[in-house]
Structures are given as structure tokens and as C-alpha cells.
Amino acid sequence: MSVYFASDLHLKALDDSNVERFFAFLDEVRADGEALYLLGDIFEAYIGDDDDDPLVARVAAELSTLNCAVFLVHGNRDFLIGQSFATRAAATLLGEETVIKLGSFRALLLHGDTLCTDDIAYQHVRTQLRSRQWQSDFLNQPLAARRAFAVKARAESRMHTAGSAADIMDANSAAVNETLTRHEVLLLIHGHTHRPMVHRHGNATRIVLPDWDEHRSWLKWTAETGELYARGQCERVDV
Ligand code: MN
Image (cartoon, rainbow, N blue to C red):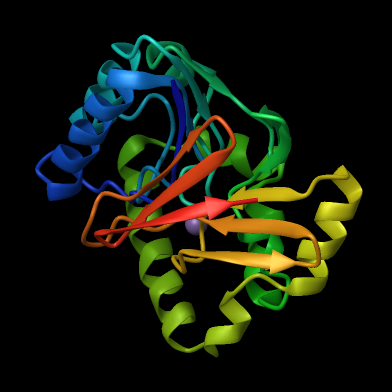
């Protein structure tokens, strides 16, 4: 039995090629998965559980057919996933930072955007978007207005990414160390940066999940070791 982790699928529409890749991946999970953790940004944009886009319904339906436990962590694109979607997907929504037991290790799971503390402009926007007031104001708008906002936000985000130095968009090592220490863990798994890699921080290990730009990509954990499938390659991960 294995535990699977994936993030940053950025599914855009039902006819997106990543949707088929995602469902093929779920077949692998179905074969020997004891749990699936989706660590954020499964959707490119998410405007609320009442969205009538068939993509949202289809993803929830597929997830609900898995016979293993499914856990969701919010990404910076799909932080509005709510309990209604989770119920339809037969999944459990986790908090921003969650420690799980993985073999004999304690592993901290998070999306990864909170580690990018050098991106001050982004962190500022994040604080606003995660406020209860902003979210309730947003969810009270009609779907069309929310959709228009999401299109604009994606364009702004692309401009921000293009105009920012690459290292600003990566995890800050002081933030990583602070987070590892705060949770007293030696294993951290996150996505967000689209820079799949196994990093060492002293005796701690940080696994960055791949995005799904061209390949279906995931981390598979069996007993005490992992296999990171990134961009068509498989790397063994020993902690
Ligand atoms: Mn992200």
C-alpha cells in the first residue's frame, strides 16, 4: 500500500489534457493507494463551491470513486474550495499546515506559498484574499463577476511572475527552517513553486512536488521511502 501526494495540476477546463492525465493518475491511486493528498492548486482558478463549471463536478465525482482516504489542502488558486466540494469529493479538507504520520516519519504538509516570504507583494495580496471579509464579499457576487475577477487575477499573477526575479518566487530557507522547527519535523512536503526537487536542510528533508505542465507527476510513498515522479523521470527519495 502506498500514500500518494500531488499538487499544482492547475486544471482549467474539462477538455484540458491534464484532466485525462489526472484521471489516469487516480487509476494508479485506486490500485494500491491507502491515501491521496492533494496539496493545492488542483484547479487553475476556483470561484466557489456553487460554480456550475462541469470540470468542478467531474473532479469531485472522480475523487469520490476512490476507495482510499482523500485529503485536500488549499492552494493559492483554489483556496475557496469549501466543505460542499469536499463532501461531494468524499474528501477531507486539511488546514494550512498539517503534520501526518508517514511510515515512521512525521511529515508536515502545506501548499508552499507561505514559504515564499521574499515575495512581499504576493504575501500582502494573500493576507487580503484569505480574510473572512474578502471571501464572504467575493462569494456573494454573481458567478459571472467572480469568473471575470479570476481571469483578471490570473493575468495579474502572470505579469507578477514574469516581472519578478526567480529567487523571489522560491521558498525562503529561513522560512523553511522556522517552519520545520515550529512543527518539530524532519520531513516537509509541499508544491507551489513548480521546482520539483529533494532539498536537504541540515538533517531535514524537503520534497517539492512537481507541477503538471507536461506530465502527470506525483510523490508515491511506500513503507519508508518515496518515489518522486517528476517530468517523466522517477527519483528515489530516502529520508
Ligand atoms: Mn500555488
